[in-house]
Image 1 (tube, helix red, strand yellow):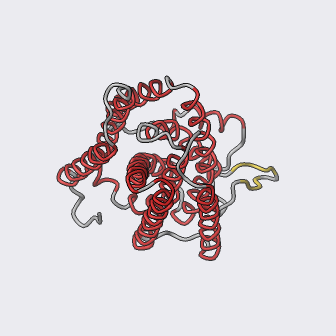
Image 2: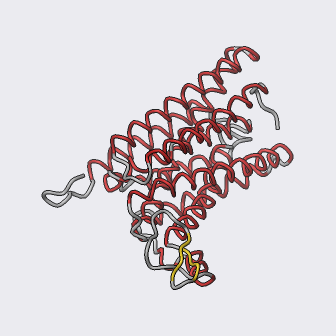
Image 3: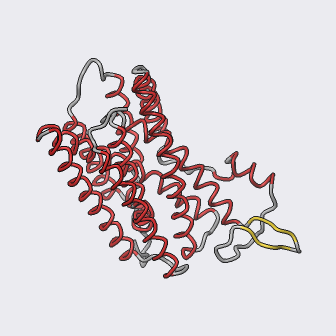
Length: 321
């Protein structure tokens, strides 16, 4: 697994992520359970994006010092493209989170902690999957074709499923959880387990955490192969992925307020996955430059969002968007 990143940058990245999570947890504990406002979510989203861009700048400088200007420009562009792809695919993840929270009627004040735990689980899971995926690709080049075919089929499946309301009640994971453990009918603050009639039972919040974790697994299987179409450098794959995840909680509360306005976004994400899958299948035939890939992804997102805004369902008179 070859990478252009120096050892000190790996160490800096790990320390930065741990520090960011620690600060987030301290802030979360200090604030306590509370409903996150759109303004707070917007501020945190901007902070996470700026931190990601600052890290990419540091990455560019480190590569420039060791490998020169051309390599630095190419690698930093790969980071930016990978970050944008992961951030885009995370939007679909957020819509599923919104559906889960709505189904279980999770109070807004409790959602923040659930998302924080989900993010930590996603970081651990994706780190393992990325390192394993990088090793497989370095040892077996044909794995790229498997990833490409999988992404193409996933894109097609996502297109057909777009606009349809998921049936959470028929989710097999939810049915299994309810079958193997007793679940209370009420929340008990932010607790995952509580006492009911003298017996220890799970709260609905525990089921929410379990489903959020399952969603992380499903979307990791979709999104991680996508970035390997841009680069096989494990450092770029890992860092762009993690930085996209770190801002997921803030982005959730930001998009949850305007979810209805981007009702066509799933179609755009389906096209992006199909494009990336096709790119991987043609990797030994046609070399699509990173800048072109970035342009295609941005163009698809912009067009989808603009059309979504123009065709968004009108809210009833007096309702807030």
